[in-house]
Image (tube, rainbow, N blue to C red; front, side, top):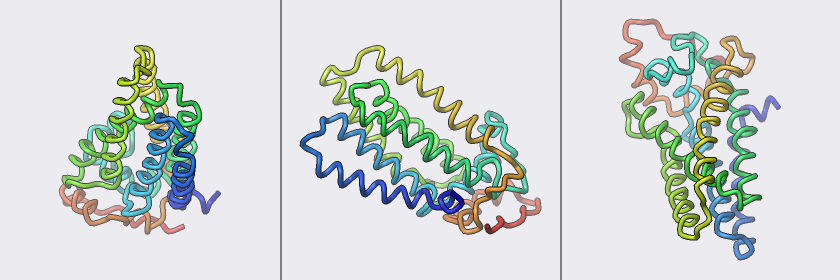
Length: 243
């Protein structure tokens, strides 16, 4: 498990290749909602790789930039000035749990049960709208930079989600309660998984699962630039610890 905590995003690429192969082989036997959901799952895996693998940089963005430069810090209760920014508020364990064990099942279930349109609306559309707000607005503003890791795949995910909405609406597959269910699931996911699980329950300023020095320094130029103003005149926290 120790190896997987720092390499799950690379394993995700292998899974994405497998799903893509399955999608290609079984294309004719899959209905359109299943094709879209499998495609959205592939985009999710690529999205996580963009955030945490290449170009990477999400550990520094979440632990240094967002807490210091955004009012979201007050919402999640993160330690904005923690010297242990290599493990707080997020750490290698919480990143793995949230991105793999919390996210994967939603997409897998939505693909296996394509008739559950409410779940498809959440996974294929509303989830990506939330990511667009985070990557396109909150993180971009905090970094003062037009790109951040995860933004490119977010745009792809939103585009695929719009097509899902178009299909289920034009095919009269989505009813009022499907939209209600998807909308109700959104705040539950945001509060329970993103805020509570990530920034409270699995957050530990003395976590034994720090990010490696290499993980903290990925895509570091823009991150360091964004920290120049907030940290002016203050000593820099020690380098991230290598494990």
